[in-house]
Length: 89
Image 1 (cartoon, helix red, strand yellow):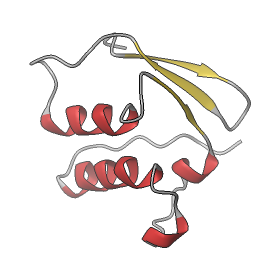
Image 2: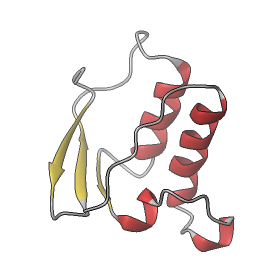
Image 3: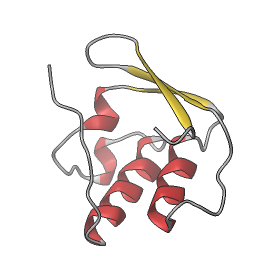
C-alpha cells in the first residue's frame, strides 16, 4: 500500500511480488528486514505454499530461500508486531 512492492495473484495459492522502489528511512526495522528477505534474490519473486506455511517448521523442511523470510516474520512476531498471513483457499 505504500509503494514498496506490487503483488499479483498467479493462482489461488501463488503470488508474484515485484519491488517497486528501494527501502528508505520511513520503514520500521522489521519492515526493512522483511523487504530485504523477500527480495534477497532480486526484485521479482514468487511466493508459493512452502513459504506461506502457518505452522512453524524445522529448518530442514524449508529451502534455503525460504529461511530468511520465515526468520524475518518470526522476528517481527516475537517483537510484538502484527504479522499478517494469507488465508488458505
